[in-house]
Length: 323
Image (cartoon, rainbow, N blue to C red; front, side):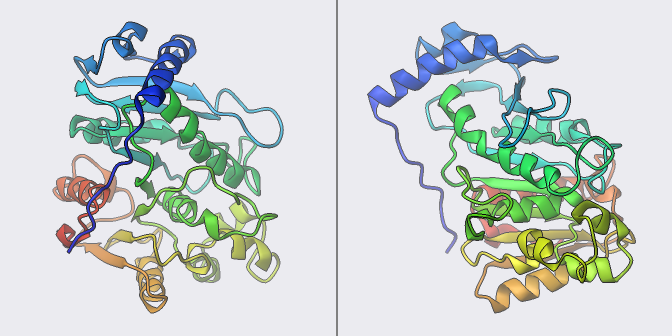
């Protein structure tokens, strides 16, 4: 039987306090192209939005000053009436080989599609190789962006944060799976002591066995981590998904059968290891898709990818099938 979402209800005092916080902080947050919900809407019962709205936030970083051009996240809210604790949250982490050339805007179509299905979506940006990122900054940024969800929840009490999904593509998939297992890290390791932890993960074309990837020609991951597995094994131990399996965190690994950038063997090896560890993991090979086409709206399988994400978000992993 699938595990159904159980949402913890807030007390009336908490709702009032969070509504006040929402009204005040919504005015100070930096909006982008779409209108943000008005402060008044939070004082008069449920929020009512006429269309998908997007609000941008800068998140603080644990070490050093954040870069406002890169340390930010967009919160997408769906249209319709929004009661307290009514909107499941999906966190998106874009890919791009951990490099600066590709940013979070590539996930805007996916974020809007998920929001159109009634989800709140948190699409994060982070510093990457070539723009101040790399080891350990990229990984710290992602951890800090995830932890800022606690503050977002205080501003927008209609979202839920107790049982959520994180979705990543390519390098973002490695970061997403790692993000769901940070509670396993020692206190002195990068990204440890999470304030917010996604409890389900969708990996799309992810290098989920970083050592295998590095040993099979993936110099991108070697650059991001700052060395080969033999040179910096302790770093791989911290962030390699296959070395940080959480048996209580279900993972669905989507991978195109024609992916020559990140071999499907990465997903296969992770899923096998997770199952051996007693975890709930599933491999979905998408026939005919390559590394990029699998997340393209032009793909005939795109709706299946979206359906997979929503099924995992609803804790209905039994509905996840190969396209």
